[in-house]
Length: 189
Image (cartoon, rainbow, N blue to C red; front, top):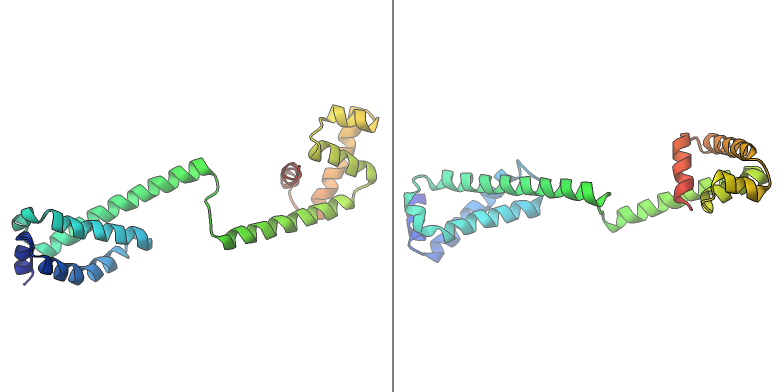
């Protein structure tokens, strides 16, 4: 029966093509699910493979085993699309930084950032007045250590000492590595 439908499609019979399309769509879809869970990519490959049967119907008489031909054709197209998607993902990941996610992800991220900012603000309130001022000038205003020393009216060496103690206290209060504390302070300016 398969060969008969194949011959009818070769002759331009749209009803035979619709029958083949209906029969093989689910089979090919299930086969493709073994290689990818990306349903959009899978459906694109399926459409392309089945449309190729119709557009290449003049050459179908050379195909001896339609079943094998369809699976091979679909597999080739699907793998090509998976490879293209991986390249695109790698390019996007390398050039766009963080991938975009849904609204829920953005809300969660904003909530986490807010919570971190609140913890940092509370930890900064626990510093001495001089330490808070030095942290503010250095990280929020972006002044150099020389400029902070000039504003505070102290030596550069004393500024380094104040800043060092402030950073160590923030590290202990937040229970975070020093590098993380520095990154948090730099991102809040």
